Length: 200
Image (tube, rainbow, N blue to C red; front, side, top):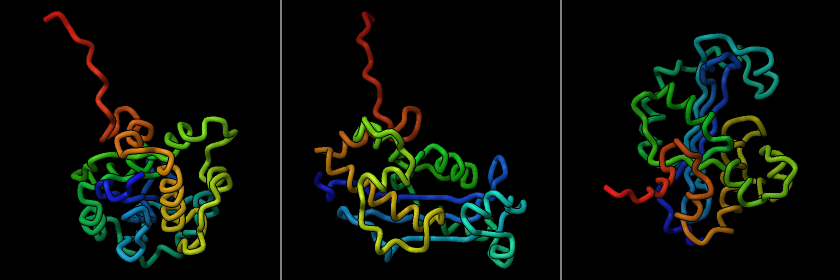
């Protein structure tokens, strides 16, 4: 894979407050440039949700209501998040979830395309028993020594997903091949289905 041919791409991860639909409590956006995650220009934000964090969500990511008490509300940071992402491609694990939550919080935002590393993993490693992020990290053993924070926090998970994406991308000869395997139907960037020729 020639990584220099890739368009601008951010690996994103969001953490929510546990309600349905969720309020965001954390967003991370990590650029991938020339086949490497670029931490120097990454964005990571904590935000105080409108509704309290549920005990279950707090147990998963560790972001309690006390931790978030003095953080800015979403309205204060949404402009910075939108500005960083722009119209770049995004990638995420089980990407339709991150895409839907971000789209709900950023109504004006529209990425060029959405790569799903879960969908890509099923195409790349068809015989695995599980495709969770943890199972895939165990299978591919990427170098996570420079990952910020810890598992289930947005910056760590974005970094881990970026390394997973880069590892899997090596199996594909071109960006178009990667997109064909990795973009879910109906999401931005999905290849157009070939139209059957008609008689008129």
